[in-house]
Image (cartoon, rainbow, N blue to C red; front, side, top):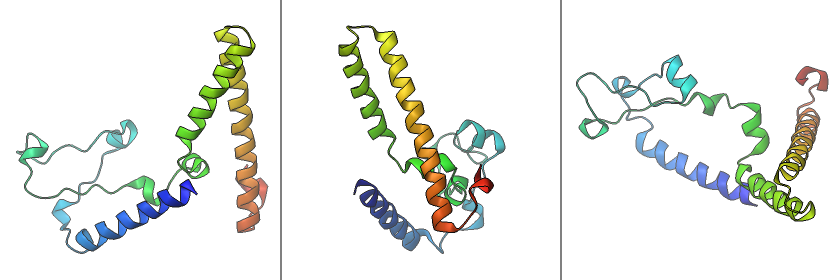
Length: 141
């Protein structure tokens, strides 16, 4: 249910942006990111003669490469990172109590569970994708 809400918010926001910006963006306003900016996830450099974002008079649009080609992990987790983090914290607390305050052992047990969840999600995600798209599992391995 939470995923549907997030997707609905995203689509609504995209529709609003497209209606306001869609055909009104000039080529000079589109700022392509360099490879270094993509690699380090930093914002693009400002145009010549501008020292800060406050000095800009026009809108600068940066194409999002992840929107067109998202990685498999972001599709697989579908914004559930915070929920998984809460689950791992709860596991840590439970293991901490069970092993009588041995933090290192608790961390190791949480790590084992996280690896099992990751393996399970990857296997089931590939299997589900293969069923829905009729792609052979060996192709995604």
